[in-house]
Length: 388
Ligand code: NDP
Image 1: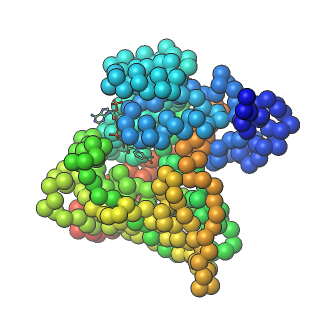
Image 2 (image 1 turned 30 degrees about the vertical axis):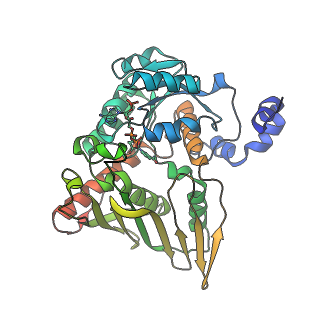
Image 3 (image 1 turned 90 degrees about the horizontal axis):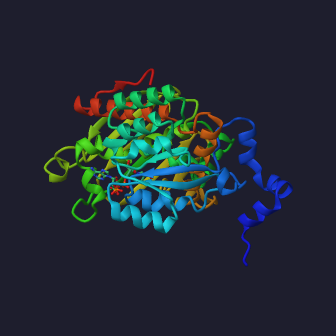
């Protein structure tokens, strides 16, 4: 029988696992938010049990497979409105418990579910998050957190009332290439960040790709490209500017106004955030870009970083631009971000401490986007973000 690294770790107990656990365990021991995939695998019965709600392209393509790489989490339940798909995926993944949206509230009686991952269209995030919290479960809600900041407030209040952990699925915080960039920004080589440029977009194609259909309906999407893809630029840039604070935002709409796709939501925004330090983050989000854009540039006082792509599932790349040269910086495999995220949330929930990307962060970003829309509606005048 082939024994893999995981079996070896489980079988070998204390000494080997302690040696392998490294940074992640040190973070846990210090009570810090877990930022990497913990290397200590727990036996299944000791792992946190997860329900995934909404079995769409992201859940099926990325979230569910991540449990195969996870060390602290196991998939125990699925929730879907499609009974055939539910039965098929439960069989494929060996998942014991299945629910429809109608009997979703009965998860309250299932001790195999500790955490719930919401992977529904944005307009349903608040309702299904709050129902899970009221059922006594911790919730990791996909980005963007909700349709409005008022909904985010209600979600945060529900988590506090239930005494449960609420996180937002900002997977990039757990992605090794971005973690390498953050480590360099924290170090000596880059110097204070002066400017960040963020460009994120793709061509919305509702005819050929069904998940793009709800993204163009305001009630289900909350907003347009800023909600779906521009949020990566905002959230990732603010991650790199830790300790700084956004002071104002200005924005203009940037998309063809006669394009029938954008009757309900905007198709593109150019935005600019001024930080307390004087640094500026400027970016764009679009449903009209080809090819897929996911680019971040970090210009420091001493040298710069370039990421292209910056926030994808599998292929991020980081270059250090210094002294007229460009050096590619190696980092771990981007796909580990999914297991890293789910395990980090499991451990936060187990310990009852905030997740590294908490509900408050999702709330901040929705408020920021609301202010970007306000600025764009006023023709681009800066809107104050003080207190956000
Ligand atoms: P999909 O349209 O592919 O999946 C959404 C699923 O939600 C559907 O398959 C369906 O599942 C369920 N659903 C319930 N009600 C509705 C409804 N009225 N209309 C449409 N679907 C409904 O979307 P995605 O998987 O692309 O996105 C889901 C969530 O994940 C969104 O919040 C999105 O922003 C987020 N996301 C996050 C990413 C990341 O990198 N963090 C990347 C991509 C998406 P069922 O048939 O099982 O009921």
